[in-house]
Amino acid sequence: MKNQFNLNIKTPCSEKFDQFSPTSNGGFCGSCKKEVIDFTKMNTQEIITFFKNKETQNTCGRFNNNQLKIYNQKTPENHKLNFLSGIAIACLALFSSITAQAQEVKKTMTSTDGASKIEANKSEKNIIVKGNVSENNQPLPGANVILQGSTIGIATDFDGNFEFPEKLKKGDVLIISYIGFEAQKVVIENNKSAAEIDLKIDMEMTSCVIMGEVAVTKVYQSKRN
Image (tube, rainbow, N blue to C red; front, top):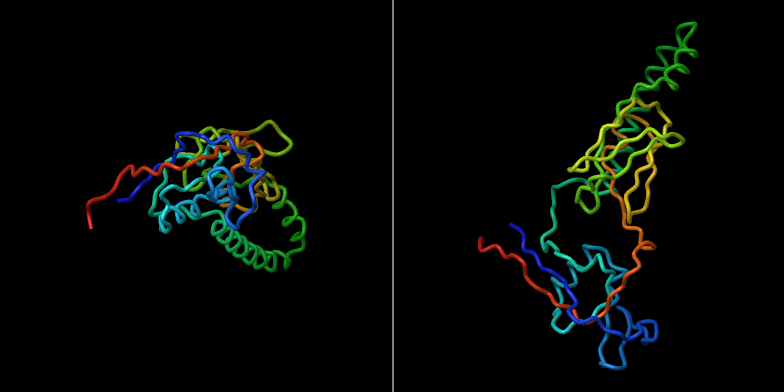
């Protein structure tokens, strides 16, 4: 079972962070004589590590409003692949696909109409695309998946899954978007091209920044060893 904690700022501070003396982790507040940690530049794992490994009593911090939430102290190890590992697998699948296609081209080129058959396969819509849209392993229901240059698309279900309503061809581009997140383009190479899509928060759309003393509350703690 996982241990969880909740971050909250009960009394927001009205001091101006941009007037603080810069420090390695944020800025020094002359009013309360304390360092204010700038968490707005940290990702989820960095925040978890900070509150897990440091003495965090009386910590003052600066947060984006969506960072004040419940965190799992123990991060999943064998859950869905993260975005970078997903890219690596996609590249491996693409490499295998290219190798197989190269072998097929060798066989086809022995016939008189080999070149025309290869060109026809490139433009044929025969790829069924299924995938999952998430953010930090959390599914995003209602994310839009649209074929670039068209009005053809679909929204993800409650678990973030989708199956594109039309077969696609190699080179087609899907645009995946969700309110508050950066849109992402996926170039279709095979039916696994959009298998795992991890959207990132668009910080430009996060307008609310909160600063103050951080309240760290344990939500659940397993009693099992």
